[in-house]
Amino acid sequence: MNELQTLLNLAENTDNEKDIVYVLSEIAMTELLDRAIARLQTLTESEQNAIASIILEEIEDERRWDDSFSSSPDVLAKLAASAMAEYHDGETQELDPDNL
View 1 (cartoon, helix red, strand yellow):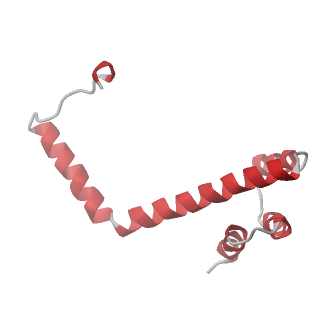
View 2: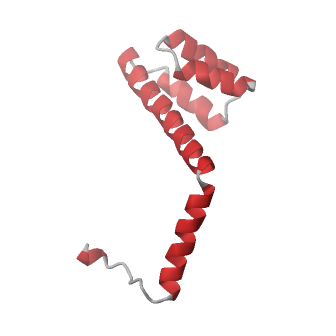
View 3: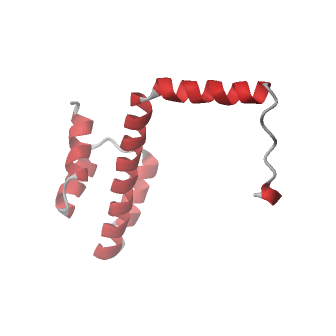
């Protein structure tokens, strides 16, 4: 496991704000992320915790999606081929947002 993944795992598996701050300080951040962290530091503890929870949940959601897609590329390819076959056979219709 690489260093970045180890740090992300630590951040995901801790409720200790100091551990999360350590992890963030060890990751080479983009300028935008650096500005966001600086802005977060001006918020109250409860606001920081709320945003940290959102970020960690988003990272976990992305990991789950990546795992799901990587374990089922054949299923996705078959679904795509089936959808295209239905389209070419004239078995589909345009989506009409007014009639949903």
